[in-house]
Image (spheres, rainbow, N blue to C red):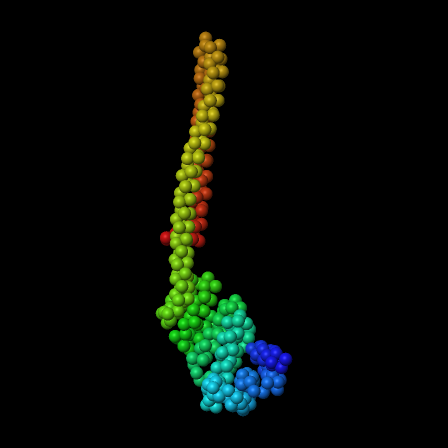
Length: 324
């Protein structure tokens, strides 16, 4: 029964520690130690909480106890030596470690908190600062706060130009913003810095091919638009021609019917030259009207597409790029 209680206190204490609730974590670890005083890991976890609080003396005391209980575990001796040598840097290391853990778990707010603690401590280790800015930037990216992400990741790269994850995360951030050029450049840098990481190369190749495809799409869209415009012009011309011819044929048929009617009239008035002249003049006027009407109808249907297309072309030339 005691073992179960110890495990429950230990697990809850670790969760409190991950959340940054050091006092609650210490309380649970202390209760676990009371139930099981000969478990080195309990002292080690409580020492972590003391380190986070900045109480280095109590942290050292707990680690010394853990080392005595489990002398084969070299981890306790290593951490103890690091704390005694550089007590401030051990806090930085722990905040970095927990920040990365929070990021990997998707707990971006706590990852940002841990990374910010490292930055506030302002360690002399530029590499550690670069990791902190990189972790915080990646966490901002996870929250879709792309502007702050780029700001932090840029600082991480400034501090350590060989920070491949920072380049990769900034590249992904640019990709989320639709900036394919910067995304491609950053991912290419990540590949150059760490060519062994397949994930960088795969992402770089996908983004590069996607960017090339986007340019190709733009090119073919412009070409397609040009072809469509030409097709509309030619189609409009033929439509006007054939429509005009259709109207002409209709009017011609009407004219022939009129001629038939007036032929009968001519026979009736054939003995009168004056009357024949009147009939011929009337027929000629009808023929002229048919021809003129057909001409203007055809012209109107041919002219309209040209006017529309010319306006479209002017608009595209004004706002578009037809250089491709």
